[in-house]
Image (tube, rainbow, N blue to C red; front, side, top):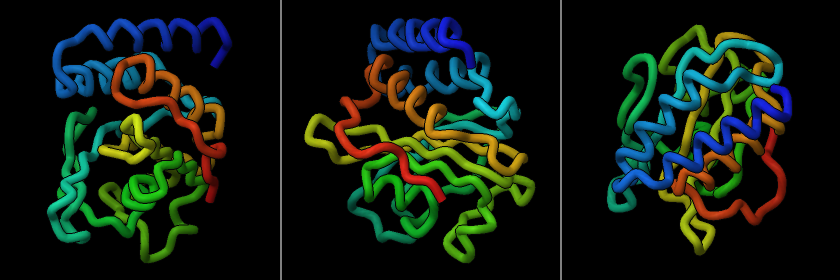
Length: 170
């Protein structure tokens, strides 16, 4: 994505921050990401949405589906998949090929081949949710996509600053 287009997406995300509730900000963010962002590799997304942490629940059912497009997905999901790993590590995860995740992968759509998962952080650095993006193409996401998503989530008021190492890749 060109620098001017990235800047426009970040500005649009910042406009979301004025929305009253986190729920409304998440809905607007999914709509913005779905309509405005293409992966750096030029591949189309197949799904984008939030999973919200339910800390009192058992690990097997701890993440619950929030706003998403274009269709529902698995919910609840456990902490063993890419979303759970991202929530626990509080670091973005770029999965080049979901087949490399083996039995730890939660396959809501068997056609999905790559994934980007970005945590929504509290000011103390812990994650309260993750934003998950899937594609039917292998290698659809890059660290640049993760960094753009981190900046947009922060601009939208859905995440504190990401003060950690760059995105993990698998």
